[in-house]
Image (cartoon, rainbow, N blue to C red):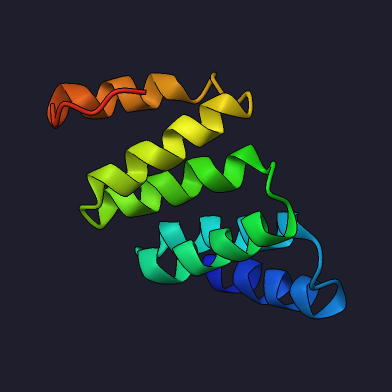
Length: 106
């Protein structure tokens, strides 16, 4: 299924049930894959508004912020995702720091 088709299905899911955080996370993920980081952040913001304990939304919002050069914002969200129990994703962050040692820590 193409990214466009996935995005259309997620838009339809949001129209059907706009109070489900997961569909915003899914659409945000698609937007990251399309390098639409600002739009992805908006989707993750909505997911967090609907479910403040959605660790994956914080983690993926952090990645979007990182790609936009907001290291401080990314670090804050990575920390929150970790506090919410999403620790297995952080191997990726260690890889990022090897290439961009900005002094951030989680």
